[in-house]
Length: 342
Image (cartoon, rainbow, N blue to C red; front, side, top):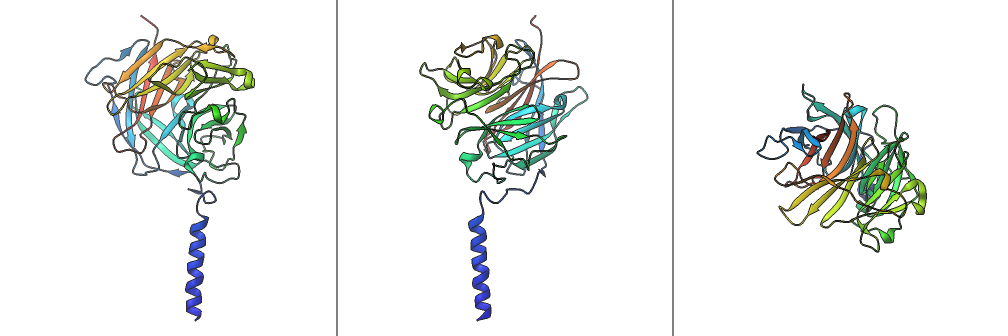
């Protein structure tokens, strides 16, 4: 009888343990190192040695993968330490960080020191539902990481630890939302968070742009966070493009990364430049296309953009793709250098 009671007690304990798995149980106790492999990309236009595309010059890039299935869905990233390291978020609620490996010519060829860590909610727990964990936008400012989420639309701010440690034990602070949840589509919310340079018309303000959520005039919602409800503006929508990220150039202009998807094999990417002085409450902004690409180029589901300066003082645009955890898509990292017009 004692053995029967013990078996029943063990079974009950196991059932209770299973029942408590979820938001109370962390995916990982802390950051974990993962292994990645990469294949360098030397040409952006497939089958062509062309490197100059308007005011952009292709530097190099690579596709990467990991046997760790958690590395998927990279949706936004920011470069750190002058392009040596990066911090990214995934749409499964994970931080992803590492170093960019380069060859002797400074071209990016792969990743090193790659790590994953869970994002924690205000109670210090991992997000239990996909709708809570769908991180889409990322900006770094003032020692904090500002993250936008889809599904349960919100913006949260995490303290960044010293050095290159991940915020795996940090609980977020809520950031006031400039738009109501009724104004944001469930799968088309705020995917762009970008911080303007201090010496620019926006004077260091944080700007957000929606992916596919539109106002009464059919244009994309945008907002300047520091100016509350009065900070709303609009970005001219140009179908079939959707905005997936954005970053500011050193002169204060905003570059938007846009994606086109019109069925299998009809995927595109482009970069649109918005004059920083045009971004103000009540305005509807638009600008010229800097680069447009399709599957004749080395692109995939392009989701992330950052702009930074290298050690030579050159302005560099870095782009990443989201493989959606699919065997038919790739994780890409691409670099372009901004050059003066001829």
